[in-house]
Image (cartoon, rainbow, N blue to C red; front, side):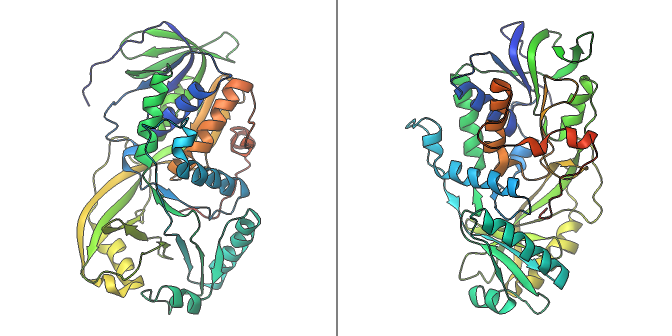
Amino acid sequence: MTTTAQAPKQSSYDVIIVGGAMYGSSVAWFLSDNPDFDGTILVVERDPTYEFTSTAHTNSCMRQQFSGEINVRISQFAAEYVKNFRNFMGGDERVPEVQLQSYGYMYLAGNDAAAGVLQQCQKIQEACGAGTKFMTPDEIGAAYPFYRLDDIVGGNHNLIDEGYFEGATLFDWWKRMAREKGAEYVTNEAVAMTRNAAGTRVESVTLKSGEIIACNTVVNASGPRAVLTSRMAGIEIPVEPRKRYTFIFDAENRLDSDLPLTIDPSGVHMRTDGAYYLGGCPPNDDPAVDYDDFEQDHSIWEEKAWPAIANRVPQFEALKLINSWAGHYAYNTFDQNAILGPHTEVENFIFVNGFSGHGFQQSPAMGRGTSEWITYGEFRTLDLTPFSYSRIVENQPMVELAII
């Protein structure tokens, strides 16, 4: 990556956001739109093309099928936000309407233990007002006769506010409108930070081009590179890049109805994707990878994804692969949930990290919550304290059973 570094216009900012992709721009927008925040914002982004960001490789999925109430609530706000995007952006007529394609999620259980977990999760989701229903194989087959179900004992399904959306539209407009409201974006890279004598605050950020920029608050929105940014402040976090594979395919014998986002017991998922279908999965061996490693392993399609897809939907035995790519999860190895809010000792270092594949659907609530914390010192609309860094220090994982 070769880019020309841009120097910031000022030598001091109230908030420096390291990373300008989905989360950096979400925080920048919600901060700049908050009438109670009147500070200056600098967003430092190393790659203005965003070509290798998680944002560029996302599948923009939306679900409420989580086992933790807070994750359900976050996704419910996301659905409301997407469906009313223009209104949330101030009613600006330039802002497009965004469609939430509610094809639903279908979690399939291949044994009684997995079915029990689905039923447990369904009760939690129902208590939150979600439309999730547990279905028997006969009920699933009646609604979606294209599935092979002889090895399935049940499934959870929800057609209300679950599916996918055009996440790139949110990102583009957050970035554009944040700039219009005064947030400054520069193509540059943070390479060092200095702390005060007590070690309790970050005082400045050094850029690759040499500038030393003073700040009141630093936001780590560096995606899979989060630990590289936190280490500049002497902080370790359990976030690493892990590869996830996506495949776009066409079927010789297309389905007569939409395919819900189906999570197969094999770990492979698939759904309708416009004129085609989308599938995806992790590799069987799932180590951390190099930050610049986006090389595809074509055996993943041949040996894992395609066999599972054709097994679950026999009509998909004859497929044509249209496109494929590998992207990175910002994977929280501690508990696969986000790390949000301030560090326990470096009080002005703010995390927006470790979303482990939930990032796009959680970005409205997390961006709003981070704005609240910076402005008021507390979360006001939705209590996001369960995601605090303190749980890592105290070794108290936030267990979420519905991880894809």
